[in-house]
Amino acid sequence: MKPHALSGRPVEQLDLDRLRDGELGTEDIRISAETLTHQAEQAERAGNPQLAESLRRGAEMTALGDDELMRMYDALRPRRSTVEELTVLAADLADRGMPRCAALVREAAEIYARRGLTP
Image (cartoon, rainbow, N blue to C red; front, side):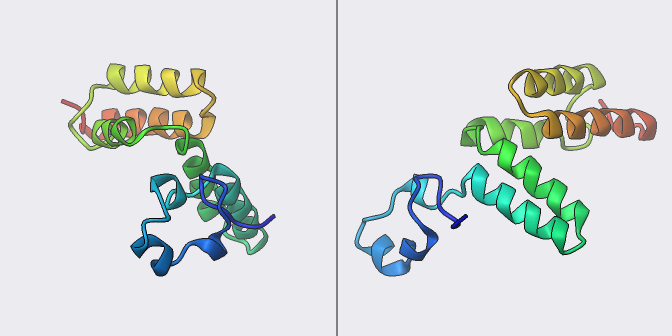
């Protein structure tokens, strides 16, 4: 598998000259889920399962728009969300086919509750 941008453009075609000439759009500078999954497989083979899991979560997040991603990031900051709000977010992510992200949010809710990091 050859790494490519979300637009499908091969990474070999992503360079400063094309960017300067206006040939690249936002979809050209965003990574694809397939490329992140490929990188996760490489990390796993290299003996780094934590990095592999993080890359797989990243692959799931490519389905999110920038605003939604920032809302999720903000919700996960300590003392920003209640356990109930995080539980709802986790369910929404799971329903949308993002089980790894959902598991991370559920884990955060449990840890934040245990450590008193919820409002």
